[in-house]
Image (cartoon, rainbow, N blue to C red; front, side, top):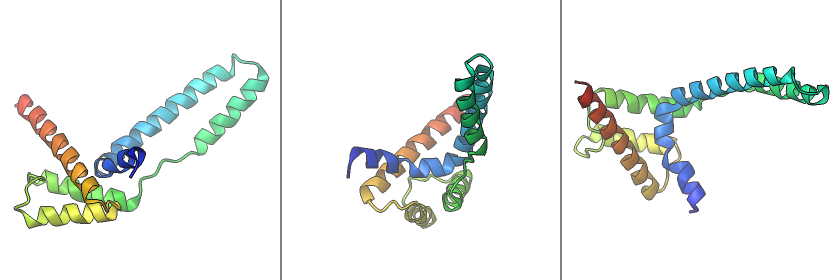
Length: 136
């Protein structure tokens, strides 16, 4: 398995959980880019301006969508986390089943990649809990 493939698959679970936030950031970036291009359009020669109009049109028609199954997996993991359970604990069979279902739905077939996903998620949870404790 190549490094690029590893990188692309290692954070599928994280992206499933944060998909809505990522989608919102993409939409904001798209809007900012369109606004900037429209401002530039008026100050460049018309030949370039017409190309900018085409790009703006394509951006206007671009839609960012979440895969419904990934969104569902993310919602399941979020619900599990909100229950206050420790995701890295193998004592709770429900957690293990939820992670297994999530890994299967996200096409994580390698046990090495699944373990990397689980570790990355554990680090994220630990960091979030530390921030939460600082706020108390």
